[in-house]
Length: 163
Length: 163
View 1 (tube, each protein chain N blue to C red):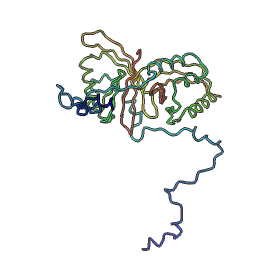
View 2 (view 1 turned 120 degrees about the horizontal axis):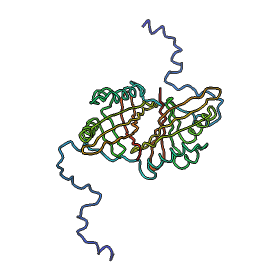
View 3 (view 1 turned 180 degrees about the vertical axis):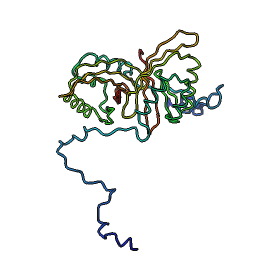
View 4 (view 1 turned 90 degrees about the horizontal axis):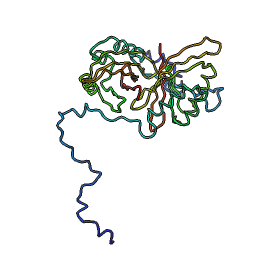
């Protein structure tokens, strides 16, 4: 009771914090606000710059397994899209795609450059040398584009050079 | 009446074309379909490969104005996102951004590599040399990622190296 009585009676007439403040008058010409940019972000958690640096370091490390990277930064709902025009939905489907690829090809070398950091994700330039089973060595150049949401990679799209 | 009488009475019992055909039995193990990829596409019209080739040729041409390229391939609803974390919505806002940039900087050189072609868009590697007004010459490397929908670029995101 004592606490309550300390509150000034006038408070209930004060503007509520949830109310939108009246729009400020601006010297800008009419329509200018439509052309003004708005902040774009990947949300909370690890940033595109942080995840991008980890992906580039991983690709250049010669590590055989991608599982530690996926465990740390990939969403279970990852969408994985190849330049061939096919998309795999979810971590298990992405893992199956990779297992198929590794069964059909031997990776001889991989060099990643970047990351190139954007507001909603990052890109990595990848040069890869591989040998399909029973085939000749192939060198591929691609740009991998990763979309980040709240600290996790939710989408990866591989774009190929020389198409 | 004559036309109606020509229709065989049995037709009404035939399966309708809108009905889903019964699922075919498959030799694949249960759950395999969940892991299988599905086609992903940018829709009808000019392909990411075609638009990407036009963008790279334009950037390397030394052309002063981007307007012919935008008129041909950009959506009026283009979303333009910079690595700084800001996004411009719509053609007019994108044009205002570019006008501001060109007013603040002198472009000394530009070299585009690509396109790197994906299922839903394309990426271009850009090296640009510019001189801010009253500042020193700067060299920038970036990857520009373009999303294509039904023959038009609906989104462009510029991702910067060295962030």
